[in-house]
Amino acid sequence: MAESSAASNAPFHLTGNFAPVSEERTETALAVTGAIPPELSGRFFRNGSNPQSGWSPHWFLGNGMVHGVEIQNGRATWYRNRYVKTPLLADPERNRIGEDGLIDRHYSCANTHVISHGGKILALEEGSFPFELTKDLETVGAWDYEGRLDTAMTAHPRICPETGELLFFGYGSTPPYLVYYRVARDGTLVQREEIDVKGPTMMHDWNVTRNHVIFMDLPVIFDMELAGKGGFPIRWSDDYGARLGVMPRDGTNDDVVWYEIDPCYVFHPMNSYEDGERIVLDVARFGKLAFGPQDGEGTPSMLHRWVIDQKAGTVSDTPLDDSPADFPRVHDRVVGLPHRYGYMAGMGNGPESLGASLYKYDLSTGKRLTHDLGGCQSGEPVMAAAPGARGEDEGWVMTFVYDPTTDKSDLVLIDATDFEKKPVARIHLPTRVPFGFHGSWIPDEA
Ligand SMILES: [Fe+2]
Image (cartoon, rainbow, N blue to C red; front, side, top):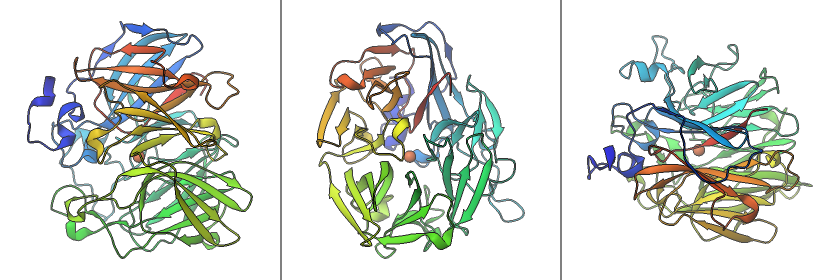
């Protein structure tokens, strides 16, 4: 089983199909089972953690490697995987803290997400600057929006489908703990606002609507007393509290209205939208997140609906499912707008059981459909819209799927309107793609 069986007592993120691959490859002769929809042309890119040395202290700390498949007129023309070539990859021993005492934001794992906006493809990791890639996955270099980005950038920005703006934030373990940014459709950074939060919260993701952004100030915090013990100096806090901060998209810190909620953690919201005075947020919610061994037992993430009633000043929290799942996505066209459908990777109590099946939720009926992967495991389901699609689920759910019997992976395309049926196409790769984090379908016209 390739590199993966090297150390049976190694942590989960270094074993099985979490273990890194050692080669960068380019393959053009790709076998396909089924038929790739001929109207698809573009690239599916997915980022993940692939420690170059073969070892990292935490799943989140490996060097970023992007795996990509190009599709042209219904043909799979190449697969390639490339490290994101950051200064950290070139010089792992380099001190990230500069002589001025500030963190060097070029020192990036660049391992979490890959998006396209303003004519640039960007590999993202929440502690650092983004890194620009070419369509062939070569690294151009760090991108700091012509010097206007002076903090880290989240790996979970949102592109507004109506304005084309890229909305994001950066958080830090030192002040300023939270900074909001807005980037115009053409890639120009046009707004920067420092936002007050109670402390150094680990804000992985957030929410946007047509007129607002919603920050999640939740009780997973930096604790430098944990530094030096390996992994992250991050823990659950019983004292920090939890709240949601609603701000107009062109607002400032003075405009943020905070709403207290029960302590919990959300890595990943599915989507959010406005409904009159209410804001509806569908999120993958952990009752308690056990970030490290110091935190004891956690609870798995499941789909919940928060409704913020801005008039009454209240937030309701309703479980929508009792089956653990994470990595939620919606159609790019409904980001920040009312959505009917959402897609998630089924998950047990921990990342080791990620993606044994995929879920499609119909939020209008509460019904969940399951795509059984038959003993294989996947990752985040990415919705690739059919060109000219009118229906929200007209398109294909794409994800890399690992088959333990062959120790190889396929890129799978599932018809989202016929979700429980077998994939319309499996693009067979000559290697395995380690389980990773987030990705995008980037059509040629993007
Ligand atoms: Fe994430």
